[in-house]
Image 1 (cartoon, helix red, strand yellow):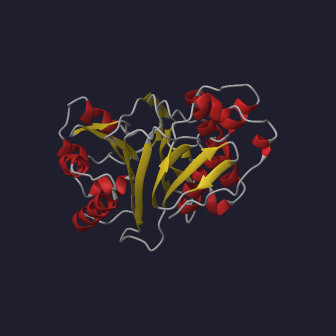
Image 2 (spheres, rainbow, N blue to C red):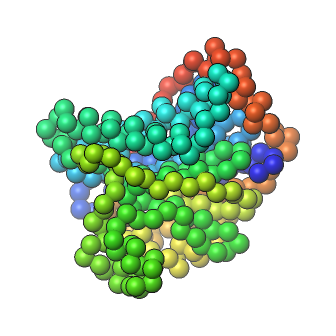
Length: 302
């Protein structure tokens, strides 16, 4: 976008009925030259001088370590993503998609190493759906079956893919949505972060965004209680401040199912902030000494 956009967001998480512990986690943080700055579960923020990152992770495996895995993944992304600003301060401008790919592979190794050192954590893993807003583009990453949707002019688009064979059948039109939902292998993930697997191959994408866009980032627990048409209708009617939409989607999903942990973030893009519209290059070309400072890392929320 030529001028700086303003984002509104709202997030909530609910523990499912199967267990008291919530293995889902979400995070919202601003990424800048001083590192990652934690953001509250709802708010408004300009992209004038900081990128904004929103992510959801659904932990699994490793006995009681599902919640640990999801929290670790989000905290590590907080450490790594701001390094693009530090590189720019040193005169380097890394490609954001390449940086995101390297970040996920590093986090994957970190999760496996953490699990290997503790018997009770062996096999722990988590999904990831991450949206990284910069003034130019939105960069996406996903592994597993947490999702990111875009609603533009009332049209719903799923921007990520579930890493299951059943999802591929549904997307190719080989099975219907109801057949996909009832498929015995619907949750059999072949791609996750961690899990003791030697590597991870996340789905990555860069897309433009526009004023009026609405984004939904969610765990599979939300999808369990909602049809695609429910999501499409809610996002199409979503106001600029999305809290009511988040509350309505969560309540409907829990009423219809509510068995699994359920987490969602809705982000809306509003018109450009012309007064605050700072040039990206100028924002990042700051003294190298300032780039070595770090603010406290955000804490993922369950």
